[in-house]
Amino acid sequence: MSYPTHLISRNGHFYYKIKVPIDLQQHFPSTFIKKSLKTTDLSIARAQLATMEYQTMRIFTLLRSGVLDDYMVAKLLSEIVPSVATTSSKVQVGIPARHSLSKMIKQYMEFKQPQWTPKTKMEMGGVFGLLLELLGDIDVTEITRETVLHLRATLMRLPPNLHKRYPDQTIKQLLDRTDMVPMSTKSVNKHVGGIGGVLRYCLDIGIVTANYAAGLKLSEKRRVDEERSIYSVEDITSIVNNLPCKQTSPERYWIPLIGCFSGMRLNEICQLYVEDILEVEGIWCFSVNGAKDKRLKNAASERMVPVHPVLVDLGLIEYCEKIRKTAAPRLWSNLTWMDVHGYSNGFGNWYQRFNRKHVTHDPKKVFHSFRHLVTDTLKQAGVQDSLIAELVGHSHGNHAMTMSRYGKRYQPKVLLEALKHLDYGIEIKRFDP
Figure 1 (cartoon, rainbow, N blue to C red):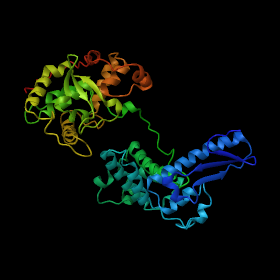
Figure 2: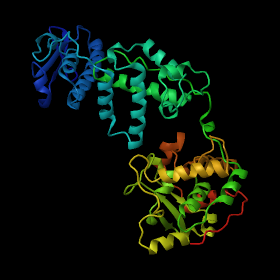
Figure 3: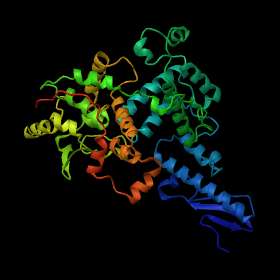
């Protein structure tokens, strides 16, 4: 009788047997891993085989990561080669190495580095700094469910940006105060998620036996569509009436209007190159792409967005042609690139001041409110969801697979007809290029 690969039978008993890859053989006492499945029942052996295959491949992957010390290697190997725990000459199993929180945070951040943007790395650095301050540099094996619950309760009582806003006060002093607005649920969850990420990493490499932060994020009470407020017509009127029309800072005029009539993200607009304004099938479009030093939020962000007729009438194409003749590569030469924020940081800071001075003091009304305005206006006008999703760079939800596999993107003329529903009934002064 033939058996699945890596399953063998000796005298009616089943065993798991696999050859150790050449690049990993230095870690093992033998070139083969052989382990009794302790059964004579083939169906049970098949089920246990799947578990052993997963466990072995996981260990091979972790060994190749290059981040494990000798103790961690021995502990991993002992899961599938029990003799390693007593025969390894490299380590003394039973005398655990200290896996301090700071050490594991460092390893975790190095592990996540390829996946994180500079901005995420900076934000998570702040998260882990506060976690170390609250928990101390404890051994991660000492973290329990109660530890994480107490951490969460403490975070719920602390203010946001505490060291920036209260630089002279200790954590204890801040916890004793009763006059502070605590950090948001989203911020609490970011910190709980941070410790959860570290513990999950430690679980994967065999340091801890459980991720005690799993399932402890707080429930968000507000809906996603309530996280930012939509600009009202009165707000848009205040914006356009106060937009500066200065030759020295054209971006301060154009970027808010592009956001208002396209729903593009702030960074997508700030990073536009001259070549990203082009004609497609006779229609002027913004090409949102990740070429050169530009960044996209996700795969669905790459798209063509027609230039709204209002923007054309206001002189945007003329402005672009003027910049093109100067041979300047980008539309907004005043905006400089930063590793963390791309091209949007300087403009974002200016717009925040402009928004609070001329438009609103509502903290939920920000530049991103333009995206909510565009999507809501199109939705209320009866524009179908898939059209809106393509315009603003969202996936098509439950229809994503159907759209990507069997359908092409919408033609610019179809998208333009949808955009024409963005009519706020407001007169806007023209920019003189």
